[in-house]
Structures are given as C-alpha cells and as structure tokens.
Length: 163
Image (tube, rainbow, N blue to C red; front, side, top):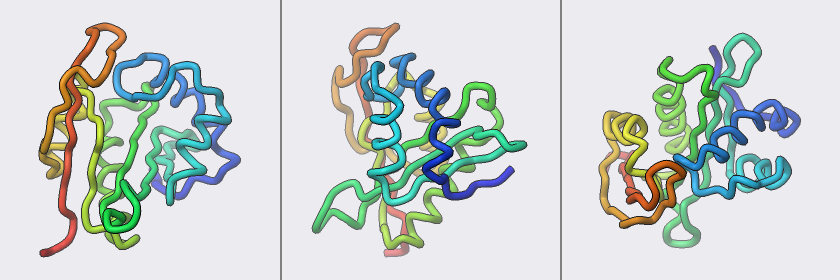
C-alpha cells in the first residue's frame, strides 16, 4: 500500500471510481453527467496536488488538496476524497485524511475545511469527527440526495497548526 502523487496519465484508471461515486448522487455535488475530461479538470488539473492510494497496482482511493479561498483566506485548504467501492471498509479514507493533513501543513496551510459533507453520509461524518474535524455549520436541505431527497450538508473544520 502506497500513497503517492497521481500523474495525469493515471486519471483514466481512477475515472471508473469517480464516475460511480458521482452517479450514485449520495456524497458529491458534482453533476452525474460530467465527462471524463471535466472530471479530470476538477480532480487533477485545478487542485494544488492530487494523490492516489495504491494497492497491488490498483488505485484504491484518491484525494486532492487545494486552497479553499484566495487572498486572505488562502491559509485554509480544502480536500476531496474518493475510495474505490471494492476497497471500502479497509481504513483507506482515514489514511488519506491523515496524509492530506500532513501535506496541508507541508504546503503551508494552517487549517482544513470541508465545505459540503452530506449529512446522510454518516460514515464520512464520523470518520472526519474522529480525525479531529468539528461541524461548524449546517446548511439546510443543501443536497438533493438520490434516495432521501433534500438533506442537510455540514461545513466541517479543523485547525492544523499550533496556535
């Protein structure tokens, strides 16, 4: 198992995971009809860095890291995480989160913020809380869940450096 930088040519190998997650319409506010090129721009081209979690030459998961805002807010980063459904339940998301917090500090970020954690994604909410994130806000009915209709999203935040 290895976490390393993704190279652009690997995005097509990650695309099936990305596509299955956005088509489920349960966790990400990305249009389910994104093309592979549009997805690559969002996940690989725009972020500061993108990483993959490799298991036996397979991409088991990935995350990106980028500034959450510009100018006076650029000390806060944002990350997105996806785990291949075949590898869920193996602690990969937790390892990606730990790695991303280390990378955030190394890149000069002082805090991390998740802008839209879907409230019905209880596994992720509990994981992020266990990793030290707090729910600092609730946006009522901000996500149109495929199964549950309109559900709340959470803003989750963690200061990463010593104050």
